[in-house]
Image: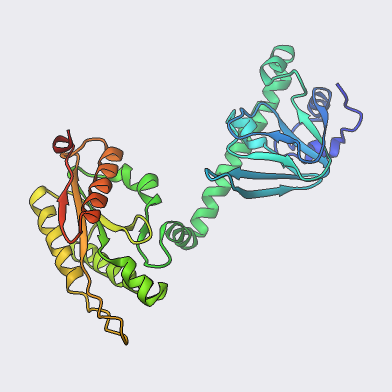
Length: 330
């Protein structure tokens, strides 16, 4: 185990070790190691348990996430003197990102190679208790700092939350809100109503994407008006021209009436006037709806089933309302 390049000042710079006595710092250094990481080599991978943390002596380490489509999302860039992964190490968590050497890099590793915090505790429980106490103080301090930051910037946090979930083109909520939040606050019975405008491709092909964008804004306004009128509900944009609304405490009778009202409201939208040889465009929509948990107790299945019913009805000519139920499909 090499400790020749380990600078005590760098070690003490770590928040985890900043409150330790000199003998405890010496213990940490004697049970650390150095790592030379060539450019492009991984320091750790997503899903890997954080069994060590690192202090960057020289070089650069970039941290990124890998998206489902294979693209990379940059998270952070660490340079000389930075601490990497101490909070994950203290929590015993799994990394949720990848760390790669952007340049040839040298790092301090604690615990050193072949060591764990448990093996160190068996060797010197007193020293490890001091380190663990420092870890608890670090976590408590960070939690307090985060809570203070949130309280001091509540309006900014709310705005950031809104922007994260709001579709910029229509002002509707994005579909990701369903997975992140709505599923946790559904109240049985909850109506899921999906809408797809008919002949939308004709509008876009004949008048351009700006006409399609304007049409989606007008359709979105209908959904938002429903939400405002009833004082509840989440008007959503699922895909490019597929929208809808989710409403809690909505029984069959009310949901069915609402789909009819929605269809009539779309048909009542002012037509796009004729332009030269391009004829007037009138609005109509295909609508699919279902009631959770009556029609299917599994929300994900209900969502997928309703969406499939919407597409089937739309491909079949559209301008109709269909009701999805697991019992009917079975």
